[in-house]
Image 1 (cartoon, rainbow, N blue to C red):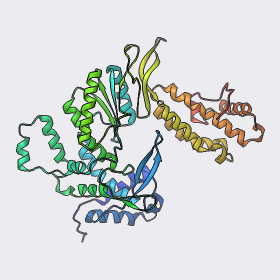
Image 2 (image 1 turned 60 degrees about the vertical axis):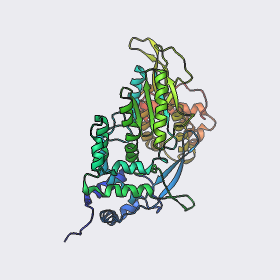
Image 3 (image 1 turned 180 degrees about the vertical axis):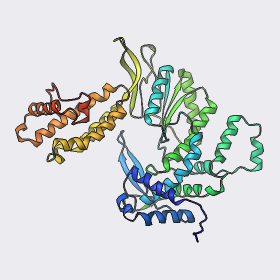
Image 4 (image 1 turned 120 degrees about the horizontal axis):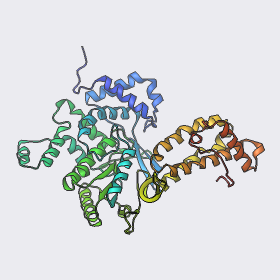
Length: 451
């Protein structure tokens, strides 16, 4: 006789959740259990997750607080769930995402199937050509300040006869929004467990580095499997759908909490910015007073002036740049290219490899095997727009490799140019050894010094 459970959760859904969690990798949570350790007793571990979730007795453990440096020098607070908890979150995500995904706004690209940050950058580029002004929004502590009551209301708000009568006569947009709210989980009695566990995850405490527990009354920890979906659900109602109702002719781009709004005039931008500020404040969010700004998209066709003529979006800087036409002529166009912050991050990442101290016993082929996947990822992202800006930066790799050769081979001691020429000779014979060499970025004609 099969075991009766209050909630019907297929075991295969838990298995698929494990596959997703394993593919995304990640560190252990408060129990320090890694993916490998979890996998050693996989069948029993997955059964425990399924059994507790199906019984309604699954309570998530605290999330582990980890702080990582942000590009602006501040610290970003992450909340790392245990491996088992990530599996449980993935189970809920598999059920909730298909319900809410079809209603999400077409200008929302963050953490959605089949969409990417590059899609958002491409749309922003095209719209900057058509619209003269951009509002660059910066939301303070977005993931830390999401209101739990609004997230849960979005997924659980029932609709009674009194409210149903009030909906009659409402605009189609307002009625559609109300229908979307009650459509998620409440109409299906078999999905009562979804909001149950969402609420428990939102309220799970955070374990600090000293082991103390910190209760949470707002926010959804960055690092959780379910957090991006809940953030998108929150912002759909707090911003996306609201923009569609209040300013239907104004396009915007949103990737999680990174938002740009395109306007036809400074007056329109100022009006919308103030409206957005009030709207987000009403939902518990605050715009950063210094980082939020209105930007003028200046180029050869738009010769006005404004305090701000550039903005960063998804690690790309949008500003006036020299563009070459098919006929060989040049003009100034408003285009994105890898940002200075992203360049700095790449240089810091290269230095963190510590090739001269940790890899000087390895062969050049082993070094290439280590760095090629990383460099390929940089080029695939930062090389999509204004590619030359990204490739110019990667010439730095040749200087680092020359420094590695100088440290590895005694004959190159204090001989920078000899090491660099040796590297150039290798590149001439083995063009495909390093990924950036296949792009034409091989050592040639350098007379400076690696730093």
